[in-house]
Length: 397
Image 1 (spheres, rainbow, N blue to C red):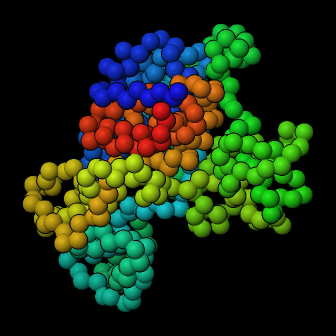
Image 2: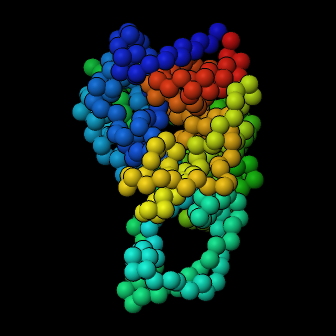
Image 3: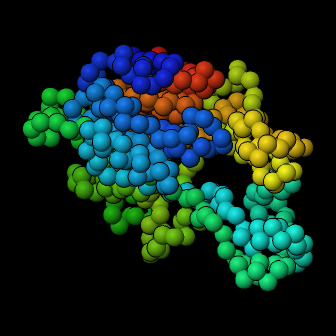
């Protein structure tokens, strides 16, 4: 029978109550230190004290997979390393649905000069920020021309790239002796290559034959059945790259006679169904992924969820179209299929997966579906209720 132990409280204090060398793997999505959406819990990446406790409770050779933001990945990795882990690799999760949070320098120059810009056209965009806030779906927005000479000089300049990548630090607890000896003694130290192979597509990879039957999830689609003795043909070796299958990302991969190479590294972003599964009995909230909900008339900045007032001291003007509602309103939900893959990659059969930053429970949900035991720690009571509902829905008992 699968077990799940969901613990409410600060992760450092809760971790101190876990026994030494008691968990097989840690798969977690910790704070990125970006002050995301004004959330206080995201003011910094976790300190060494957290990772030292994680190191202590891991079995020798146990792996840690920790998501991070591109701007703060270096701080996350250094703190993990300084806590005593050895950095083994980095997995890149690439997606095409990120929205650039960039300042239009030309518009900012005209605004500072009090100059009005001429509307010269319009364009359709997937999501637009307007005077009424964020509007999802296909939106038509104005195209304006620079007014002042300085604005014309800096037309086309911005301040940020489009986010399309989240790095995952791959670290391992040091151990004595050989990997073979450690695996035999503790069951940890290696990664599950065959169960995480990227399976060949039956239509475009017939020349390489079909893979053996597997219960594992395929990055490139549904598992295919067949038989062969050569393990080298079971599928492509798992790579340190995974993407969401969006058109923007797929176009970056080279094409070939048998189709785009992108099919070997696929995982979609979390769907609404994935996010809300098991949460039917919970109340709806304003969906966390929609950032601005008001504008300060004093300085023109937008209000983010969780902020009490504008930094300039002005009062917010709330929008007339609030963000849509959702039962799982956690702002950084990871797709269950991605978390299943990561759990399976570093956890021995029947092993214990720990997530010290559980959030809305995606790791726990994934661990249950993969047949692992799970320990989750979360300090927010609202998110704990969501995590309990999502994990319980997997009928792990």
